[in-house]
Amino acid sequence: MPTSHRGNAPDNATLIGFTNLRHARTTRPMVMEKGKGIFLIDENGREYIEGTSSFYSAALGFSDQDLVEAAVRQMRQLPAYASGLYRTVPAALALGEKLASMAPLTNARVAFASTGSEANDFLIKFMLFRNAHRGEPQRVKVIARAGSYHGATIATAPLGGFPGTARAFNLPMDDVILVSQPDYVNGALAGEEEAGFTARMLSEIEQAIERAGPETVGAMILDPVSYSAGCVVPPAGYLSGLRALLDRHGILLFDDEVITGFCRTGSMFAAQTFSMRPHCMTLAKALSAAYFPISAIIMDNEFYDGLERGSDEEGIFSHAATYGGHPVGAAVALRMIEIIEERDLLGHVRHVGPRLQQHLASLTGHPMVFNTRGVGLGGAVQLYSLPDSVGVRGRAMQDAMMAEGLLLRVVRDTINFAPPLIITEPEVDELFARFTRALGAVERAEPRS
Ligand SMILES: Cc1ncc(COP(=O)(O)O)c(C=O)c1O
Image (cartoon, rainbow, N blue to C red; front, side, top):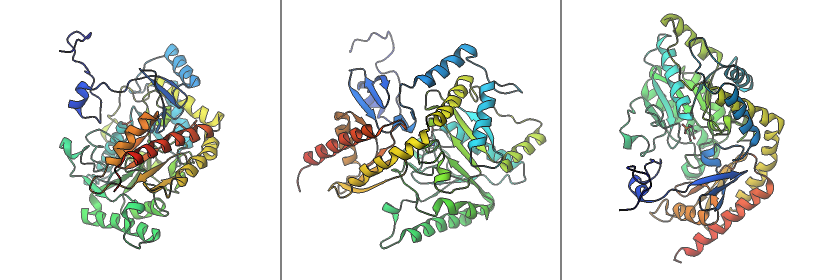
């Protein structure tokens, strides 16, 4: 028996997600103790670059004292209070106003939650409420794209079609309509031009709507650049063409900007980068640079009117969450938005993003590299998969990168890059120096055929 200083608690009592639980029982996880800028130090004193910002979230890295001070100030003044029953806190009101003014939506209204999953889950719940109260209770289905990720809850986990995140948990999926990820590189037919591919993707959505019965479909949800699907950058005309298509059938467009919101794609929101006109948006992660759990649902005027009408009929809008509009989260998010403006983070991303894109492009032609792609301060390197062994090279890269002190998110044989927005040009160079050494190590370790 291993000795334990934890009384009756087993070793590794904490369940850590996306691990093999049996393996995790006896394997100590990597434990991060400190952070400085884009770097993390683990409990053994080893230093790593977090090249995907810890689940695409830590937009200011791991030691921003301005944000810490904003949290401490709010903690001292009023550390806890729930918004609901005609009561709230100043920071929640100010943040709502700020986000409404920034969002590319008409007369936007804002609701708060704690996580990205919760924001998407609440938004779907709001849609069901709205539709029920406008005489369309049958409009319950949601269109989502295979490989996208919108959350871990019962309603959101099925919105992507990962076998592991939905089917393995036996979640209800009857009201989910899955369509293809618009992945031109991997999904184009032989000889198909990008414009033809885009037209085919849009037509697939239209056909799926017709098959399901347009009057039963409430919304389509999408992540504009799907990092979970391997950093799929949408082909020209896809996102800008969606609104008209969905409007023809009275279907809403939900823009999940949990990863892409706040400068990642080179605009404040990806909706602007790709000229998309959503009805509603969700935000999380970079909203507070992940220093405090907070997420937001932003709704256009027309959608919100539907909620108001329903609340008139019911007498009340029976929805709140204890931490939705938490004073500390709201204060941190307000400070984050000020920092974006004060430090011209968008300008910085537009300056340093091309450096990252150059490094990605320079890997094209490497014998192991099938494709590179990206937008703004993010992108991916897709390796050729070994025959009948998808993911094997990706796993080898994971280990090799770790040995080089580099943490990046690997999706099968695709490696995603989305460093903290504060990364400098020399740091981008260092990140790619480590990546290239890891790539070389994997190449040398493979048996020659
Ligand atoms: C696009 C997108 N939406 C939603 C979520 C869920 O956010 P959370 O993990 O905060 O619940 C994620 C998480 O990675 C995400 O990438």
